[in-house]
Image 1: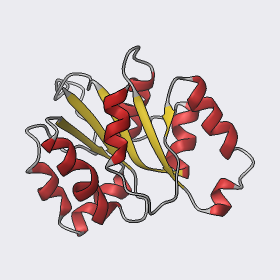
Image 2: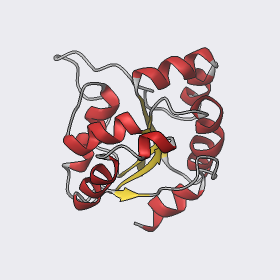
Image 3: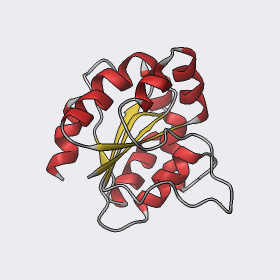
Image 4: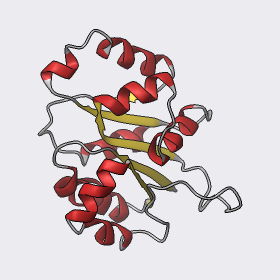
Length: 166
């Protein structure tokens, strides 16, 4: 089973993604298809985490789109976990903006019947107070996306239990 693990540049991603999600998912038997937003990729590269993530999967860790004549590097994952999902990325997903590889993968997943998508928002109080925040979450819920909201310091590993229960 392939897990599409998508991350945006939310605070702590450079310390938490591998340890709290990628390693536990690989131990559970998931084959990881890791896709990063450009900001997350920059942060993870600076922290030396991209190479560590690559060591956990036989699939490419992606953040750049492929060329038109290149084949897709793997089939559609069986499920997607988007952690952390910044306010910017939540808004893009709600309205279908695919302006980077991570958002393209997620928008395709949302449009593919039978592929569960779990989103863990990470937004500060001012971002959550924006007049469209709740509407974006409601829109995603109406698409069948599962929203796993919680305090930003809550552990991420339990999100794998949610994915596996879907």
